[in-house]
Image (cartoon, rainbow, N blue to C red; front, top):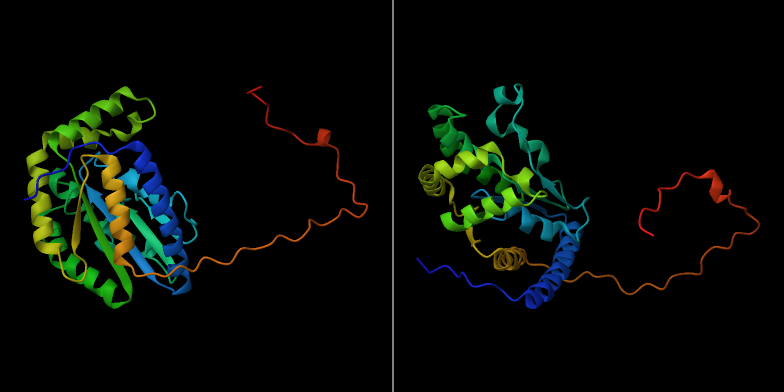
Length: 265
């Protein structure tokens, strides 16, 4: 196994390269729309591995009507009685769309299995049926891309502590996250078994080394762009026509409107 790169990445280089990659993401978006492609990208991994940060950098410059994020909560009592994959199917892309799953149907192979939220029979059925489900998606014309964000125990602990100390990040540290700290080995075993059953040719797992957030973001976005051949469909420069003249129309006075107070003089 290759040694993980732990060195920080220069911030100036990071911002410049991120901007370049985001321009390419816009080109990819337009290609997906023009060619009616259907793309699903799954983001899985340890708690605090940085999945959300990568998703934010991908969607930051994209049209939410073309690229949307799906982050489902705890299943309802009704959803618990459905076919397991049923609650995910309505969120799959139509032609010209890319859907990013911030955690996905692999919850069953991870948290549900480790925490005992599903039965052993349900877990085994998932391992049998998941590869078939994904092959069916691929045969239907959906491209399935799966990323696993891998971090060390030490880095996860550092990020948990940072969340405790930062008010705007404290919400990210759920009781489930805290419990996962106590079950590191169990989650490792579950991940290995999940890979053994679901790392298929039609939809392989791609592991992102995520101990260094900025490096992981650039690597993941670069890799995503490399998986979908696309061309630059950027439209030609448009010249704006002169603004329409009012031709006698008088707008209502500003005093008729309710404005947000100017708190920052």
